[in-house]
Length: 207
Image (cartoon, rainbow, N blue to C red; front, side):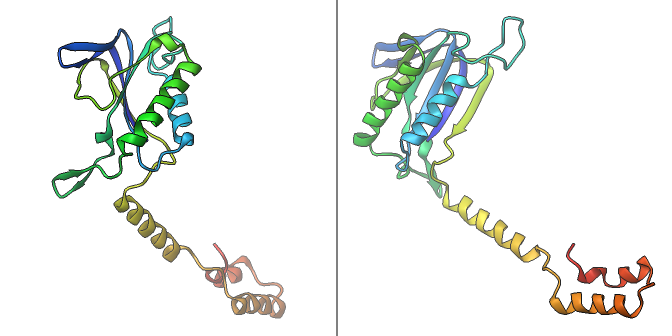
């Protein structure tokens, strides 16, 4: 799951000519639900959204208080386009959870947020509607958040695999048994050997 969290002075959602939701100071959260999202992703996002410290404390110290600490409002808006990836220049949304599954998932997430905080301070838009979202960003402060169990882009997976392969190729090999035996034999032949003699076989030892 992906989220764009914005600290706002105010935000509202309009459908047609009707304003369906609005908040004062708080957070406006755009949520993109993935086909692979589970209740674990939901719990992670609810916890982070409500506890991320984007607000100042009573002494004006920045990044010290969460939306719950300040008893501010949250406006959540479902936005499947966050699950976009590009095929050339064309956006593809196959990573987004289908609407018939995403709607109950999103509703459940809102219920969790209201249960964890104060129900009257959690607002939302209109799922599946063509909305106009008005945001007065405060700062501006915008945070991108992704649940750790969310899907990974195929290019990112390939990049990670290549990095792992490079690490394995450059990882030093342990010394061979024959190298250890040679070093032991030298010490037995010349027990008074100095540290310089040890240096002769240092390349054969494990770094």
